Image (tube, rainbow, N blue to C red; front, side, top):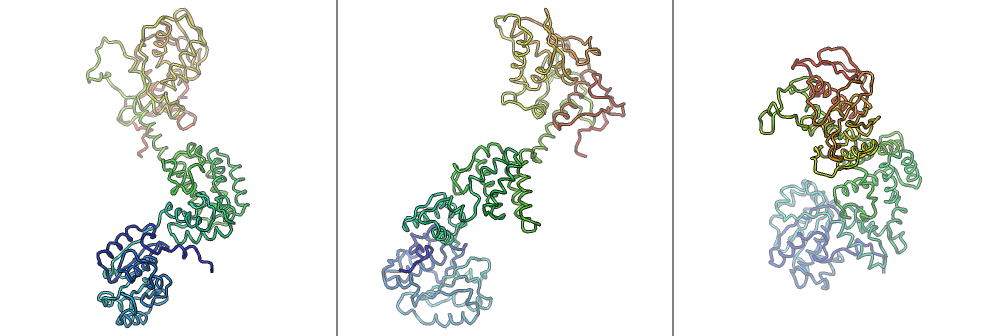
Length: 609
């Protein structure tokens, strides 16, 4: 028996075997049951989806000896002749090679004669959009009022090229691409019938490569079977067809995530040396990036990923966020577009791989915008709404009820804490643990048994550990401080910089309260500046702290703003010029420049201009 390709051998012979076109099959079956048979049908859709096969099935259903019936027997002489393509009453015409008006005139003459031995004379015109305009015009009257025994069936892959006058005279059925799961099932059944062992991953790859076309899937399946020697595996397909493969892709993208540029370039050379073409390499990397993007968004469907989820290194998707994966995808897509116009395709691949190796340093425009917006909000918490760099000038702090606090009330420690936006900006400047993302809350003293007097090391370790739970910036500054001295009723320490000195002075009440909570004693906390000679007489602060003077508050806010900018953008301050043309003062000095009261001075952080 001569060899028959799988696409012909597995051609559907009934509506039940028509895969992926349930709507078409159900509609035609119902019309046959009710006897509502149209005189013209137009089947349109992608290649290899069953348009011509459906036309043949419908022809058998109409001319079956027990028909018209939705279930042709397939055993009568008419069904066998139609299946073999030898029926005199079912005429198949190739529209691409019979485009002239003379061919249509021949059809017009033939329809005058009734069928030889069947109930209907059926014309199946494939690729009908290839007919000329004159041929279409000559066919109009015939398909509008044909003899009762004539049925026209048109098939086309380009429905938009069929004239509207033809479409309006036909019942139109649009065929869809077949999903990958259905094609995998068909291929598995074909492999079982042929006695071929096939891995599901290999069949899934064939189904994805077919693009939803059943005929293309069968054709590629035959090609793979020819060199598989009775067993189809994904590794064999990658080796024979020059594919990169999941293992090498996992290793390469692991290099990208770790920033290993030399290793990534070596992997690229190994892949290309194995016979993989430049185009195929980029295609495989794009598909891998797309799969990572789907996994990152919680999609694990194998037909969409192109491989089982277990074939991917999930640590890569955890190391890269969505914006970085999108950036990788855009890099390789851009390389594919410029590949054919490059001096050497290898240069394009080297450049793309080098860019991908620095993906961990990539900052997206959205991330940068959010950082700048957060910084502006942080700085705006202590700056007046009018243009200017100075702190907001307020006559009195209002209570949550909108009333000013009584003049005799003790100042609250909440007044000297940074706002929520300030905390967010500080979080950008310092890496935080999940617990430290909340705003600092003043610990409420509880009645505890007093502990023994602490040592200097124990006290510092305790304070840093407690404060780190809620304010990473203050804890880091406290940890960096030096020269801790524990006296009878006071504890003193030295800040390492002017900005940290200001920060510790601002939150010294929190430190004092934590000491009182832990050890049951009230100790005065003295903060000394790094320039001991200039600030030997710095005032000591007790809990609750006294409200700082207006000039000191303004200077502290200016320095804090400068420090945030310095940390966020990883730069260094070379000088400071006060608004209004004041002389330049180095920011590390403790005496801040005088801030004029002019409310109309420009805002240096205003980026709108």
